[in-house]
Length: 217
Image (cartoon, rainbow, N blue to C red; front, side, top):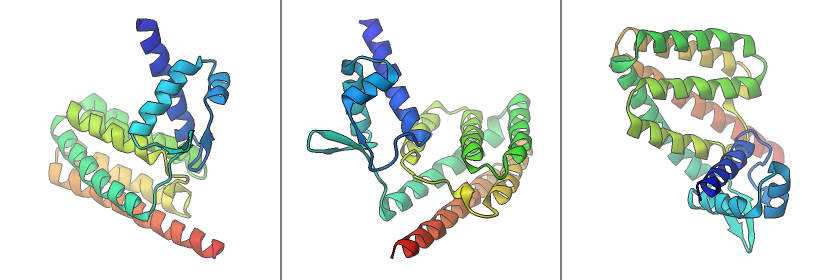
């Protein structure tokens, strides 16, 4: 029985990672047999993982098939509202509770990310690591769990706002400001800096989506 649970967890993580890294994109159809072959896992844990992803609204059902879900404009706006508030709260709590070592890790991350400018895919992964480190520094397990759910849903975004011209450099400067506020123990400044950071990312994404829609028209 424990072995089945481990298999199920592995299948779920493998599929989620594949969506997160763009191997499977919104609108792609997921087939049990193909997933089992790709990941070297039997079909039972694959089926259970797909059902779990469906309950989390990461997959939608089309007849007997599962499809990677897409976010419409309203869903995207709702997601950013929740993300903005929860991440800002995490930054406020990090300003109160982050250890010196955690702050040093955040600073090192920002510095290392400068070398990734011009590589949106790598910078997007680094960006998630940075934000996760802020979540951890909040030292609030319940907030961390909720943000984990938010970030799973963000895997449904087909593109990253960091691909927009000039956004990478600006985002790293914003990360610097967030870390400075956390290091200073200024919860209000940390809250404001992270909320502003998410707001600017959302504006960038909306502009990119509008431009993409105009090209299709």
